[in-house]
Amino acid sequence: MQNVTQSLNDMLISKSLSAADYVPTLDAMLSRTLARIALKKEQGLRTPDELWLVDHNDVYTLGQAGKEEHILQRTDTPIIKTDRGGQVTWHGHGQLVIYWLFDLDSLGWSVRNMVSHAEQAIEDVINDCLKSHASNSDSISAHARRDAPGVYLYSHINTASNENSQPLSNTPADDAIMLGKIASLGFKIKHGFSYHGVAINLDCDLSAFNAINPCGYAGMQMLRLADFVTMDEETCMQTDENPFQPIPNALSYEQVTQKLIDNIAKRHAGHIKLRALASK
Image 1 (cartoon, rainbow, N blue to C red):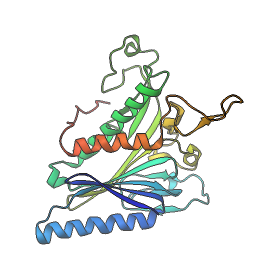
Image 2: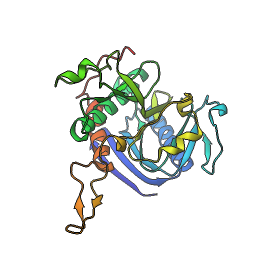
Image 3: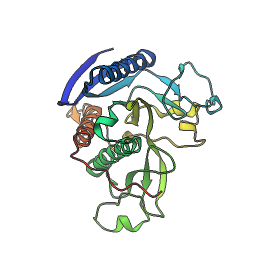
Image 4: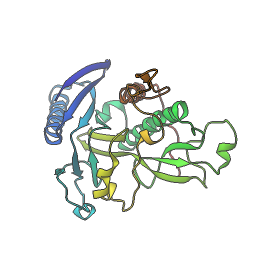
C-alpha cells in the first residue's frame, strides 16, 4: 500500500493510498481522528484537515445500522461491518474513494454543510467532465437529491433545458429522467471530527453491485463516468499506419481526481460557497 502525502494549503493535506485493504485503512483513519481529537482537547491544537484518496481492493462495507438483508448474494469479496452511516456498498479498483478527515467545528461547518459540500463538489466535477468530454453533454447532468444522499445522473433529452445553450440549473427539470447513481456518501462524526466520505464510480466494474441493494435501495442502477465519457488518456487505438494513436479528448482517473481535490480544497478554504439545496 503506497502512501503519498501532499500539502494543499496550510490547513489541508491529501494522502493517496493505492491497492489498500479496507480494515487497515479504517483503523488508520480512526487512529488519526482520535489523535486529532486528543490534541485539540488536551492542548488546544488545531491540526490540518486531511483528504485520503483511496484505491481500495475489492470489499463490501456495511454501515453501522446496515441490514444484512440488503446483501443479496455472498461472493468471494469480503463483507466488512464498519462505523459509517448508510447501508451496504462496494469499493474497488476504478472507483475513487475520498475520505474527509475534517474538523467541522473549526471550519464552522454543520454536518449538513459537509454533506452538501461533498455532493456539490462531485456535481461540479462530473458536470464539468460531461460538458467537456461527452458528445451528448447537453442531455446528461449530475445532481444530488434531498431524499437519498449521493449524486445521480439525469437525462434531459426531452426537456426545455436541452433546447438552448444555457447551463442546466442546480436541480433537474421536472420531466428529466433519472438514469442512476454515480456517487455514494457515508460519514461518521466523532466529537466534531468527520471521517469516512464519498465514493465516485469512474471506470470500475459495476457488476459487483449486482450482489447487493446499493445503499439499501433495491433496484438502484449504479453508473460510472466511463460510460458517458472516454476514460484513460493512456489508452491507445492501434492501426496498421499508426499502432499507438492516443484516443482524443479522453479523461484519465488522475485528471478527475485532481479536479475533485481542487474543488474540495477551494470549498475548505471558503472560496466556493454552498448553493441552495436541491428541492427534490
